Length: 416
Image (tube, helix red, strand yellow):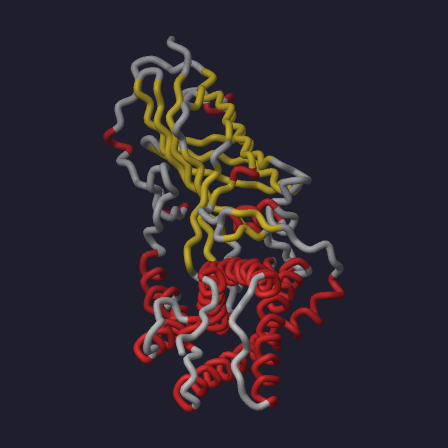
């Protein structure tokens, strides 16, 4: 007799959850190792898939409770009881697993905001730190239970289909209304591929490629590409070839034009993490002939930090890093500006960051053409001197202490 099939809604939810759960289990094995941008990305994907499984499972449970479904397969009482137990435990895994993961994220020492797939904000649960260890134990147990349930569920379906000759698979596999041998093999292959997909998403070879390319990181969208800067590599300019102005240039207030860039590069387990600040302003009073009276003051809106990852950017704003709520701006001010020869200059001053003020030096090249100037420069700061990176992030074995700064902009002065 033809099998009574589940609804298309139930079939779709069943296979979406199965594939996501298989991938999630495999991804869980890859959440080990030293802190790195790759590991951070894995955790963000793991969180997104976990919440997806939770929402889909609640929808699947609602469909199961409030819509009709095919009658249970006939057989001995113990097999029916085992089948019901496996289904019940699957719902436990699919709901309790993501919830305990949600608890882990909500009670972690370092509060990393959750953006589902980097787009949709997801809140933390309002619970205390005491929930962390129990949630961690249960979350790990749910993963092992899911592996066992997968094995039992697949074995049971194959037993009914081929040992007992009951058309069980046709009830749940899409487009399998007739003989289900080929489709069943295909379904098993798809589930197996989901388990193996983690190696395709995060293979070791891609990590090696990323390390090789870290010396020339990709620029942020819409911004000019600036290589990872180092102070000692400031471009040399032949001082002997310069032609001084016939007359002294008066001290002037320069206005920074739009389109400039203020970027930074940090090293996370040796891998470059590039970012930039989209909002900053500069007050520059300068003349190459009156350096003793020249001043520079740059104010940076720390909340505008952009590394290309929304969750990482939100973490930078937190008290563990920039502590934006307490001090939203970083300020560099300099009155000691020196000519290094040619069009190279050095400005010594102070950087005020996280309510800590420390000496800082920038080096820059300046090319003045009439009333228009082009400036490019670099600096390096020690993040630990300012307390950028608290708790587990204070150590420099994962995130290096040195952070490179690179900037470029054009400025104009009033016509003389």
